[in-house]
Length: 275
Length: 279
Image (cartoon, rainbow over all chains, first blue to last red; front, side, top):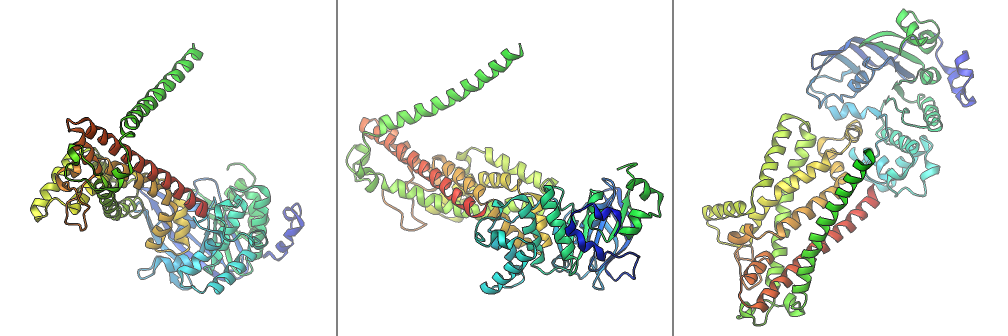
């Protein structure tokens, strides 16, 4: 365990199983020569990377480096913006996300998105989690209840809300709402959890709750987080991708990137020369 | 000096508020003062008898029922048109695209067209299709009148739906239609407000129904029969030289005001119910 870890709360023992060396990555999702243009601006330049399964990958980099654009192209959130032009391949389960015959809802089902601010649906706590399963045809009340209970337990919200499942979800605190959003995403059984600065609107306690959740969830899911806080990446990342001006500068295990960055830019960014 | 400025503008605002409120209350006062004495149970429960417009007995039940039927019909028709339009310009195409703004501009212009023009236009259509002055004709003309109001006010609330909500739904794998269902739920209070606004505008308008709905002393039993409306009942009675009949016009105005008031209050009630269960 490196020094960065020890300064954090003891619940982070899960970090012990962080990969020390670059393993034979079993890519769950791989990005090949991804180029994204927004109007005439070249936002992502020839990005290629493999997102490993069952681990946390943090994408770091200064503002405007294309982190969020990259994350959003994973579940085709650019589809409704005609000014965004995308070329290259993103492969998940041997299927190109941007392939011709691919149905977009089918791709999105594989990825749960956790936005910067929690966005609960205008319905009850129960209905929020049950929304996804209902979309995919689960109608049985008891089965839905089981799913809701299971997912709320998974995000540690069950004990807090089990007596008020019917109250509107907006009544929850922001931190609880974000966990509810996570549970809602998990309920459609995705393979990947995408987080776009998912904790930046939260207080420190909620943040650490979410971070602990990620550490727990990575046993079953692959998690990709865009984060603005280096400290967070240091706390929870297994792999780190450093991006700068639309290019992927460095990708490696957290240990490699944080302790022995290969690229000088990475080194400078990590040491705070620019941000 | 700056303190003076502050006080001056504050005073200006207060004066404006007082002016508008007092005008409003003066109108209400006149309506109540002149209308209340001739208001009776007979007025709201009976159709006019033969000599009603000469001061004989009867009531304006025909106009009350006619107006309500007319408005229910036009709200249903125009909502069925306006809601898809408002959703289209906000969620199907980009909400600040050229087409969206062009459509908004179009509805703004339609909003400003005098209602008598809609009445005349409706009348023209009726002649073309061979429909006589009837409840249906009135419903169509009033729909023309309130569609722009509905579109623009629903558009207004739809603009406030956060992009993140749409994206959250998208990433759950919801289709466009499924997304729109949640959106409608989210803006339901705004839609009710829009309906009330449109209802209030439509039920108080005389000139759209003048040629299209006609006027009759009986309650319409089918869409093809003419229907009396409150604004026209007021108009015809006010034109009478008999003081008693004139006062009845004020009673009719009072009834119209009470209907709109009751409607606004119930809409508020429904809204708070909706928001309690969702928001």
